[in-house]
Image: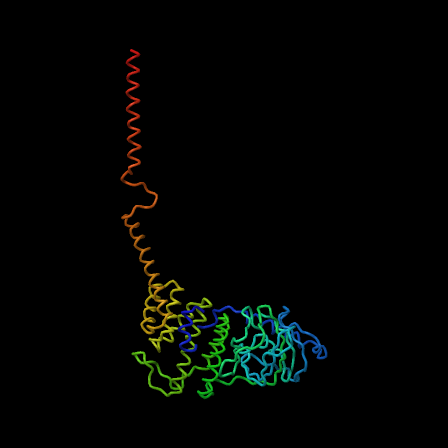
Length: 399
């Protein structure tokens, strides 16, 4: 994220995802195949051996305690799973650097490391297992350094990492237990306070993924946050013609404001992922309720610039700078758009001159000879004259 983008993002915490191609669907397909193959194995062969979950060696699983397979049920995407886990570096000192007991997560939302999330789809109630997780399903190329936010779900304040440096080639070893799970309730049945809690934690986790350069995973979390923050039938009315929110309860107002924060953050993630149309839709939703939202105006300018709509980007940049005159990022964006507009006007003038014939094309000869050319022609004329005189005298002598 650029410095100017950070300046506006930090002022307030901060489409569709169908047009973002991710590897998640591929991994889910692999998991489905692995689950089908696993059910065909005899129970006695499922313990004391490492199973290659994805078939690529990137996620290995060994069952320590079999779960309840009597009904053959496993959790599915969006189910609320109650789990315990601990993490350590494979081949390291053996120290546990992260441990959570009986924490609730929404399966498939990447609220935990991807390796843990994927493994849960192959576990039964009460099952306990060991996992070996490749970097791509752990902390990726970014890794994790002491003092950085671990992004622990369910924590009201950020928890900083205190273990050794985890590099881009670091494998992890995990101990994971699935206690039980339940289906996600219909959002309409949840009280507003609970919706706010769920939506806020999904946005926070999306911010964590965005900060690590995982824009697509961030969009997934933001979309899930929007699902639970939707209150179409709860009293939120359309904005008034002036752009101000219509009078409503404090709870509903807070819910809508949180929803707008999510849209704003999702626009940044979609911009980073190159999905410009979806990003523009996200900021448009924000500006329809908050026309002077400086962060949305700033991002709208960035999005329009990426789309090549420079004149519209300049208008948005001017509005952002007017809404936040003291913000360095907004001023820098305006300066960049003004410079681009100046260059565009210069190019247009040159093209107009050439089209109208008021400027000679490059490579055409000058209409007025230069002094060097005039001197050369003068010398040639003199030589021709001298030669003519000599020829005439020679002929006369011959007669």
